[in-house]
Image (cartoon, rainbow, N blue to C red; front, top):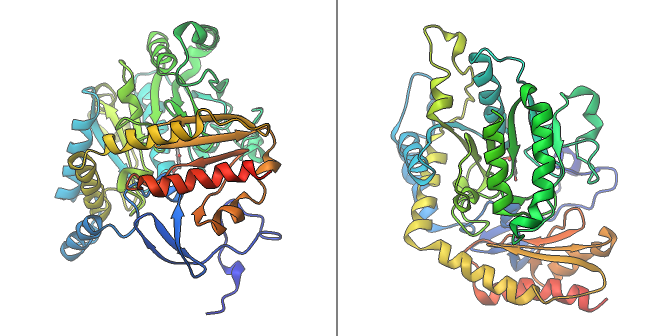
Length: 425
Ligand SMILES: *Cc1c(COP(=O)(O)O)cnc(C)c1O
């Protein structure tokens, strides 16, 4: 089939000089067939969502079973078991205060909903002046308009959306936490003191603090300390600023626990799941809120209600496949598999040194190898593909976020490709 390439507008692409995207013919397990080349391991799980791999029989079955009942109904005035069941499952899996689930169709919109909940919470509390947000440099919360503003245009890692700086609200930013996952409490103190100073100065105008807990994903796979995160949540609560965790990237095992929030003693007021929520089989997100938030929307009129309702929210196919994915993760003890992946990645990279490599980081089923100069990763994608692995470095970081079903041999192949890319230079 000959098709004109530019009928299709590709993401994050300069169409005037982009390489032709590679044609995928088939996908099975961890393998893609790309441009006729079979057996290419997807080292990224297609932007870290295909956690059980492709064409999984149990996920396919969950989708087809629901498809034969009904593919979709509106959630306005109607409801159904797949959405009810998934909401209950998510509530049971998360900390007790989180009791209420709002579904939407993508991670970005899930975060928009979280922001809207936080802002309206304060409006309903008669504190409408609390309308700014506090976010972390290098954070990523999606590409829609509200979350675009959560990338700091002054960040040393240029925000993708800095072009729009004059069009967006101005939020408050904390530096990207750089102390690492294993940092001692003492080495977090300076950053915590800075965060407290910012909270002290701005809490009266701030509705919420939003972050990707423990792992900043698209901003370069930066891992940070659970102690720091926990203390930051405590500070936010002390200063009357709500806490939103964007677990769109970290949720469902990626950092080694079911959720990143499982590693801390406190819990957020709002949390967002997406990407791996449906194991990548369907775009969907879940925004969970505490009862304190939910109750603040109750009243005698619609004036205090949450006026939001994406057409495809709670789509029954998305909910059915999400539920099945969670069932698989629980029954097949995926956390043990992820611990195995983590151990293997650590064994392969924690002692890896190369003059071009600034740092190797491993957490859960995620590897990040950061170079000093992004130019040193040019050509890596084609090199890896020749060796049967699909990779796509971002911001000077080559990373692995493999499907959890990857075998030790397959993971070895992925590690070997990254390793040999540097060794041959
Ligand atoms: C991918 C991502 C989003 C956006 O999700 P979409 O489904 O692409 O809209 C938001 N937050 C984080 C942390 C992400 O990784």
